[in-house]
Image (cartoon, rainbow, N blue to C red; front, side, top):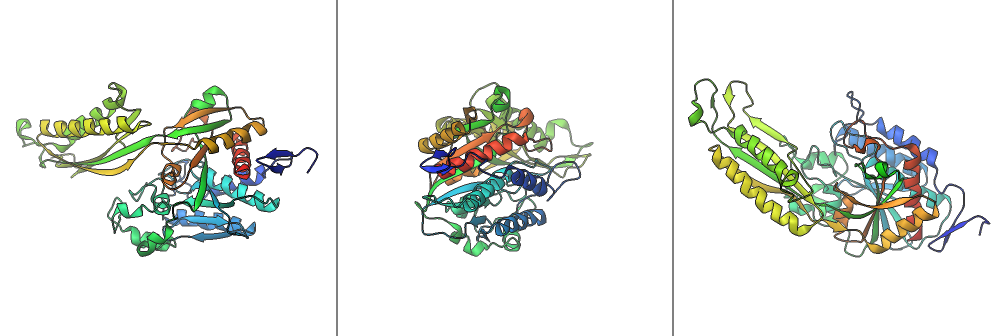
Length: 422
């Protein structure tokens, strides 16, 4: 053992940096150019040309480092070491797709840090009890195809709940886009990993909130991930001439939608029925200046760490939508677009992340995640852990999304040591 080596989980790790921080930061900058948006951010929706280019670039880096890269039937990128040896799998990773004009770190940082951890294990010849597998999950964001967490859902054996022929917001089939990305909709069941085949899953992510930055801490150890219910709402009224249709006789779908939007906000803002509530998408038909809107389509989303509160607020939300529709003389059709339960991270994995942070001298705090992550889907088949690093200004999903380079390296070092210790 080296004189200044640190022992993490029985494995000696030298006192020198455990990962190549410069390599990691360089890859983050290079990947940010893939899908660069003229408005300053990144637009790299799942299964797009930019998304495929990102998968190719990360695969190329992996192969240059002596790793193997493959895409499964669901379009997930999987990176593995040169020797597998039949060991239990410790999966690490995140996603490469982005929202429209989003940031460079959300998802991508977790994949690149996971790649760095795996490459460092191989470079340093560490003999770990588990095989490290890096996952770049497909379509986590759902920004074009409204099947968020598609890749992790497939790995968890749950892709079937999206129906046999998923489409994007414009009605274009997922089948063709998935095939172009190396997947196979007919064979998506092959992407599922059986229960017990993944010993544990770790995900590193930017916080996307202000807690760590405000506390002046470089590392967050996540104790839980909020549950999320998303309803797709169609408000169906009657289109009419804006100049000749009397006010008393209108069936204005957009008026109903306006009431729904305000009602959704009040669920969290004043009624305290959930942590947060949001209307993030709305469409109007015919969307013409001089026509009373006949149809409005929107999403209504609620999030909370408590499963019971989520069930209660969904009932309240449905009731409020129908009431708003009736008041405007329109009909409401409501479908569940997503219902994801909250999850608590695994005690053992949290302890490993804490020990890794402390071995590196990084102060840390226990935090909760208000954003959804692939980790909460994988929690259905394996214990999970998550590590956060600070977000400058607490912002994410915007071009201004950023984290200090030292914090990015620190987070990757914690991920590496936690993975080795497990």
